[in-house]
Length: 416
Image (cartoon, rainbow, N blue to C red; front, side, top):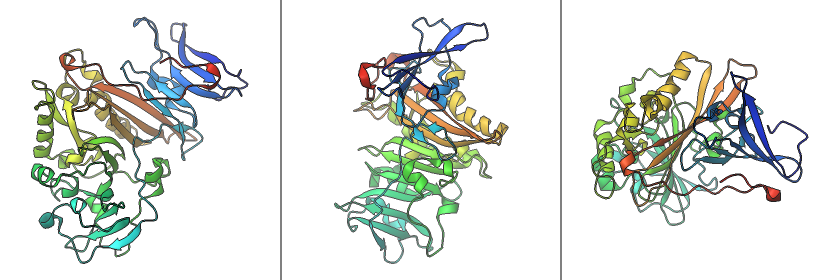
């Protein structure tokens, strides 16, 4: 729609598609500014549930979002996906923004922590209170290999952590919550903190001069220039240390088994949070992976959230078909899209649960992914969207509030 010209200024347009039966089906609504440029786009959701509709994930106005245009993607939940499209380095098309980025201060004072640091004996480095302010601190483990890079603010608090994640054979990283005991004793993951985590076999290097600052792609959230390698994940935590946004590039082509990433004790404990006091007693919850273990998602605490069991396991539930579950329509689907067609690259997965304060367990979880089909010339990048209920219908309360979006100029307002 954005590519069509000329368009009338301050105008609402409805775009139609012809379905297999020859019907004209409304696909999108677009709004222009005083110069005739499209500023806002949303899909059309029929009032009659039985009326023909265009799947938002097959709507080119949404799957190929244009830079600078505000998009509203209605999936039938209280909260739509609302974002402004951003440029993509892989081509002229745009993409949705990353859920989070890793952008520590570039002018932080470089510091090499004296000697080595034994995280197993001394606890997570990120929990220390005696760190220099406004610094980028390089920390080495007892074996001389890089353990992590930590950025502090003026109050000596760690704000950004770049470190490794483990697996069953290697062991897990205490910085990210390797065990329930570490989580409770040290308060990790740390609250209000950004994390960039990479596989231990890539990050823990003995190189005396490795790159310590993050790649530019992690700062911008545009993984399309290959500046972020597969198996790299970005997390941000809320004031309780629970991940509230995450973006990452999965690694499906790996010799590591899927089960190698699992951390059974931590996963089980997170599932118990969902049905604990102050949460949803009587509910059925698992410790759900934010990034799937098939894509080498970390096994540490930072990568789990309390997830409604039927959608996590791909089973039927009240008002839920297996095909609509998180397991089948997201985790398994992405792995299949890549393994069945190696030319399809899953560039980035984004995760953002709706806030459900004071509870930790989200009522609704949103995710989207960006993929590139390299079999086409030039390669085509598309964005896809999912939203999931995370509670049994008997425990749902109606959700929160829609994130704000700017209104089109000239008095043409998109539907709320």
